[in-house]
Structures are given as structure tokens and as C-alpha cells.
Length: 87
Image (cartoon, rainbow, N blue to C red; front, side):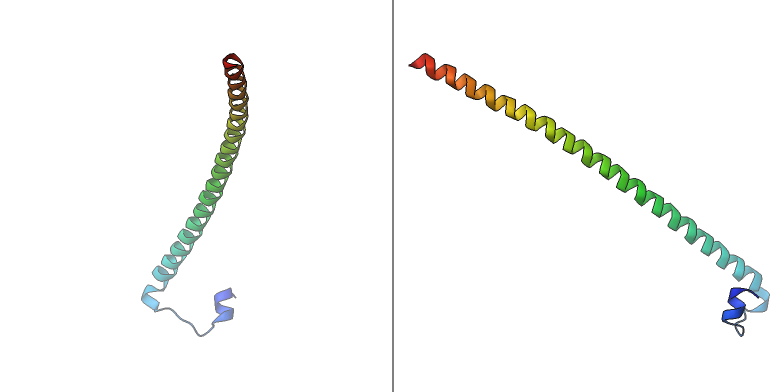
């Protein structure tokens, strides 16, 4: 016995359309499964790209922080040179 028959033995589809309805229902079910799997994979890929983008941004922030620190040190050095020349 099929699962549907065990769960609802008194349930019957209209006889002239039973094959079409069950086939249509099967197609709808398969389409839903495909769509669900497709969406799941798309979401997984989106999350992967987002993580990669965040890592790239974090790397860029680290480079810019180092560059900023060097520029601040250079500015302080130039300020010291200017102040020593004016004295």
C-alpha cells in the first residue's frame, strides 16, 4: 500500500482526471523540490560570496590602517622638522 492509501483510504480522485491530477500534482511537487533545492543552493552561494567580500574588506581595512599609521608617523616627523627649523 502507498503512504497516501494508508493515511487516507477513503480519499478518491475523480476518475476521468485522476491520472492527470496525480501527474500534475507530481509535477508540482517535483517543481517545488527543484525550486527549493535551487533556492537553497543560491542562498548558500550568496552566503559564501558575502563571507568572501567581508574577508576582502577586512584585509583592505588592515592595509589602510597600516598605511594610515605610517602617514601619521611621517606627519609627526615633518612637524618636528618644521618646528626645529623655526626655532
